[in-house]
Amino acid sequence: MDAETIRNLIETGLPGARADVQGDDGVHFEATVVCEAFAGKPLLARHRMVNATVKAQLDSGAIHALALKTVTPAEAG
Image (cartoon, rainbow, N blue to C red):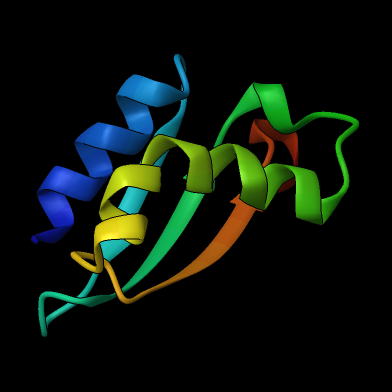
């Protein structure tokens, strides 16, 4: 698994989202996701939205860990 593939999955699964994904070992990743759809949603709901876009990879173990920062465009400044 690579960061670019995860970025594409997130951005495809959350239309209008922008994702910046980092990870060097192929199984541990960090992502900052900016999406208007996060507006008014608590942190857990935002994380669930992102995790749903990579569920198959999480379930299969292709992604062992995905640390998330989820913000709206207004919060991103």
